Image (cartoon, rainbow, N blue to C red; front, side, top):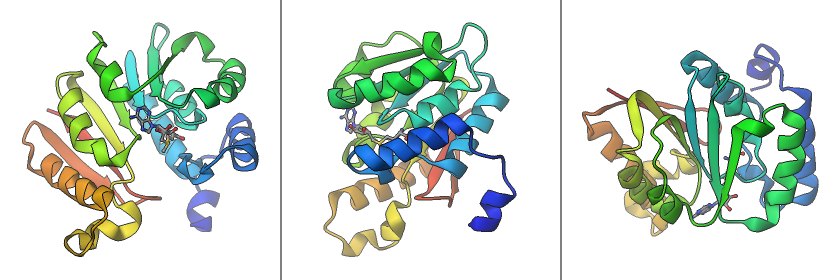
Length: 205
Ligand SMILES: C[S@@+](CC[C@H](N)C(=O)[O-])C[C@H]1O[C@@H](n2cnc3c(N)ncnc32)[C@H](O)[C@@H]1O
């Protein structure tokens, strides 16, 4: 992994600072996307040049800033999180990011809030409660533009999806089913990238 990091794009200083403060002050810091995955989010966004991005699960805003790096002049990212205690933390870094006017934070349960959105998106980054991934898949199916991509995080779930038939863990079972649903859905072409906890990229054909 060290070789991969050393020979990949550097992590921007602001994101290093954000990650450090997340690890010092916020519960469950391992949820943060982090350096290599963050650079993938940034690169995908720069390739696609999206007008609208939806992020489901903001946490401390690491992924939000990475994705915002590819937004065009009038582009916007809507990011949803139910945890109101981290909004102040997010604002500190969104204010410094240079993307403040492009980031719209929504606070509440994502499944409820997605229903209220009229926009269609070029990128959706799914990174919230794993037990609801299939519900999210249903709720975002008509919210992607043709050619748009769904990026889903944690799809390998520390490798536990390989033995989901032996597991009583609801998240493992849902993630395994979610991966199979996307593989079988002919409206999408999907590839799983085995980086960090596994991300899948599904392009709406
Ligand atoms: C893995 S973290 C997101 C990490 C972030 N996307 C990043 O790239 O660093 C998951 C976040 O989802 C939020 N979350 C979990 N269930 C949710 C729900 N039903 N609605 C909205 N947010 C939710 C949690 O509060 C948490 O902050």
